[in-house]
Image (cartoon, rainbow, N blue to C red; front, side, top):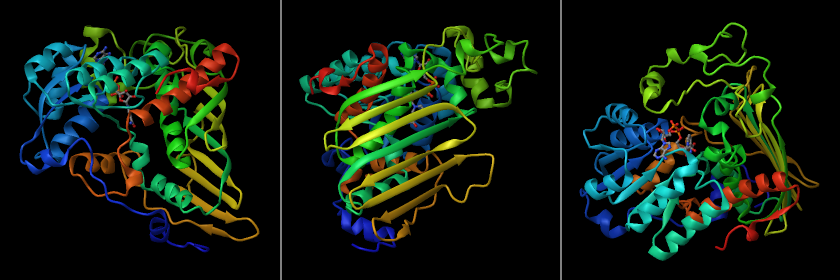
Amino acid sequence: MSDPTSRREFVKAAGAAAIAASLFPDDLWAQRPTRRRYAIVGTGDRGSGMWGRDLVQRYPDALEVVGLCDINPKRTIAARNYIGVSCPTFTSIDEMLDTAKPDLLMVTTVDGFHHEYIIKGLDRGLDVMTEKPMTTDEAKCQAVLDAEKRNNRKIAVTFNYRYAPAHQTIKEVLLANEIGKIVSVDFSWYLDVVHGADYFRRWHRLRRNSGSLLVHKATHHFDLMNWWLGADPVEVQGGGTLQVYGRNGTISGENCRNCAHTHDCRFYYDMTRDKRRMDLYAACEDADHYYRDGCVFREDIDIFDNMQAIVRYSNGATMSYSLNAFMPYEGYRVAFNGEKGRLDVRSYERQPWNAPATHEIYLTKSFGKRTAVPVPKLLAGHGGGDDRLRDLIFKKTDMPDYMRLPDSRAGAMSCLTGIAIRNSIDQKKPIRIADLVTL
Ligand SMILES: NC(=O)c1ccc[n+]([C@@H]2O[C@H](COP(=O)([O-])OP(=O)(O)OC[C@H]3O[C@@H](n4cnc5c(N)ncnc54)[C@H](O)[C@@H]3O)[C@@H](O)[C@H]2O)c1
């Protein structure tokens, strides 16, 4: 294909075998309207929204919510009201699994606890879906992989970013071999002072909860890259510091609603204007003392706000990666440097100027011309990724084989990249992925 001008041509070149989502095996699907008995552990924003209320409203024939579990009993009740169901609520996963008897478990807790619930679900023979990152350190990762093996079951890691149409387009251009062998990649992700700062307000600010943004956030980016390249990470070397948030602040408090600096803090956030957050978090604070509007300058913050890494892949390519959480704009830039040309991508998510489009993708052939690659319109919910992922699982929509549900291997390879970079920063040396877990 020498002069691609339409997305359809890329798709044709990439091949398209329809697949079914493994969470609804054909025999089970054929029994519909038998609904899957579905339970959620972790009933915060994601559990009650994307994997709660939205599912109940979009796929009433596919599932029945039979139990909700969270360490905060008030939040499970708030979530149940929001989801609009009448199932029992629990603070113990064992009790929920014993009494509600789900056959499909969704894990949407704080990242550092994902492994506990994935393993409990697998050990009881359930199908398990987990939000990203699959887990936060190498020992927990090994435990998840071992549990999957001993139970001969499969988990799905819900990497919604893969399902954004623009990201599928990038995959298809690369599959069509338009730029030949990929030698290197330049990848920079920008989190702005709104979204980026929000991680420093919440539980994510502590490594023990999130594994740092190299794991919590960058697992999306590393999964995209592993998938785009069709390769595994082999070795990483990283750098990272905390330059703006945490102890860098000259003023600080506990949380914005109880702070003396509401007028002089540029990061002041008024949560009282968001009813859903007031219901889900503020109204439940006395049960766990979790403050959704925590100060971004707290002393205990132990994650980085700017990170860099070099990653070497199994296909010989290298990536230079950076993630910054205090940028004046939100989006990313990625460029694939191939033997026969270069693919440049710029994503505009939020910026103080009028951006030309949500994504710009250009294919430039060496000794040739530059072609704009048509990008499907950006849709709501992580660029359209949320709905397309849910439709794949709960409607069994046909998608090409390269859009199949990400499994534990994808979950492991992406979170291990971030874990290895974090270890590399701590230990001041390159880290090999193969030294972290046995697959
Ligand atoms: N794919 C995406 O785009 C995306 C977007 C946002 C969040 N997420 C993921 O979803 C998950 C939830 O994030 P959120 O934004 O909903 O956070 P949240 O703080 O709103 O919810 C987390 C919930 O977990 C509960 N919890 C904490 N420790 C627990 C434990 N030990 N056992 C049971 N419950 C526990 C908390 O009480 C809270 O209700 C995270 O893993 C996050 O990485 C993914």
